[in-house]
Image 1 (spheres, rainbow over the protein chains, first blue to last red):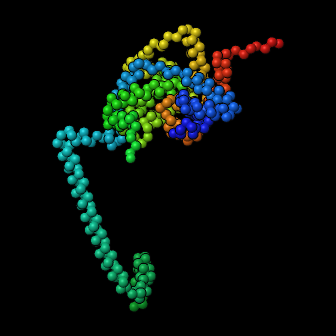
Image 2: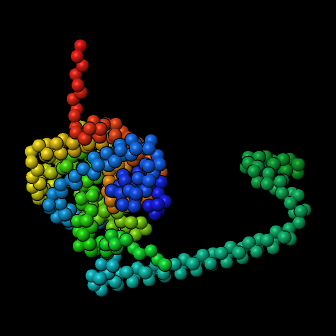
Length: 174
Length: 207
């Protein structure tokens, strides 16, 4: 906050909007007005409005306002997050059964987690072995094995009727 | 060196831990400025109290999420601002409801009790209340953000930086809002500003 001697006219005006000026602030204002007579009229308007606004009285408050608020908050408990609303701590304090149930649940979850991880590891191991086997075979495959691939593939698509006709042809040729 | 915690923020942290008495202390301290603010915005005493009540209920319900990263009053007035502007906009969409409706919704709650007002002599009371009414009417005609900025400015709990946080704008924008609002008020309240007496009747021209 500035010292009174360092305040300019605008600062003093803004202070006056909020509260009566101190003696030091009044002195600074008078000094400014003495040097700037053209500001007198404007300051008169500001000061008059300040007096008017200050005259607005405090609004009467019902004497039982606080009591009404306190009564109302007893009816509307504080908002809680979903986690807080579960109130697990209080639930656990009810007796041995909830604690046993929670312990069993935690143990089951842990056991399932371990089992699942082991299963995953075994599956990965099997897959890795299979891939290794296939890559070993694929590595030694020769291109000449593949030259009759298309013919063999087409033979598998020949319908049964066509195969029967070939038997007749063979019998005639004999 | 750590900044000392705002005393009200400490109280609010106790509320967070379930201390209802600490909450009661905060309500007692802030009920007047919050109701003042609400009244300046909605210009209805009953509604201002209902809104103020909702502000404190919202504060209590939000206690679990409260973080003492800023002054408690800034957080409180931010909640008040949001509720107040929501209500003003809701009123703008719907016709005004019966003034008694909010009371009838809470029939189990005790009725409001007001202390007797100070006794002024009749002419002073008349002038005082008429002047207050004129000032409030002029405030009512301001855009809601300017009205809110001027109402917050009047509350000594908040600095300009804190008002800016409540309004969610910069300090310079806040001061600009207040300045523009005040210029409009000066124009509307000119008769009183110039003469010191409220005189609405203009001299009639002779034809």
